[in-house]
Image 1: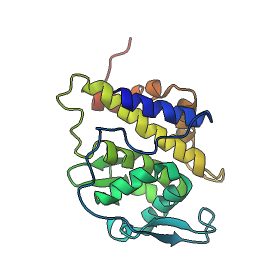
Image 2: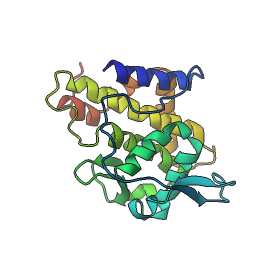
Image 3: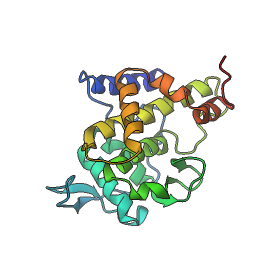
Image 4: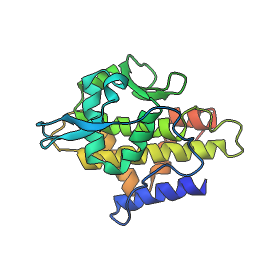
Length: 225
């Protein structure tokens, strides 16, 4: 737990301009990559985010068949280099990224299929928004690839909350880095709120304020007086 708290503290420090974000997942929270290599190459050149080119992985052509999702991944890889170790681990583990109709969440990581699934509505959002959401979900795929790390743990609820805080911190860090200020979307206010919670060191309160995360981490929605 102390390692997870340390990494989250480093992300908070990055928000305040005091320290760099973590370069790799905390020791003991992830297994070694089980398969696959990664081959870096130039993927997109010429758009506002990739004027001089954005790097990515050749393997994404199979793992992420939809160009509307590969492009945000390349933006994430290019503009948030601190997240590259997580992207490399996810690619080595052959985490796929796709879109589908979702009714219970905007996006999620499915450990059974080893897939990050984004709601179809995100396909029409600006790439900067999609990149931010991908950072959140790919963080889950790296830190808890089996989806069982919080089961049968004495402090499972606490570690679940900490992992959500870390995923939101990466989402905030990405949005802060790639936001262009021209996005027109209902997501802008939400992402700005996440950045404020990150910078204000109130991420725990932000996450625990959502009934969905209360049910996910504590088994039921909390009863507030």
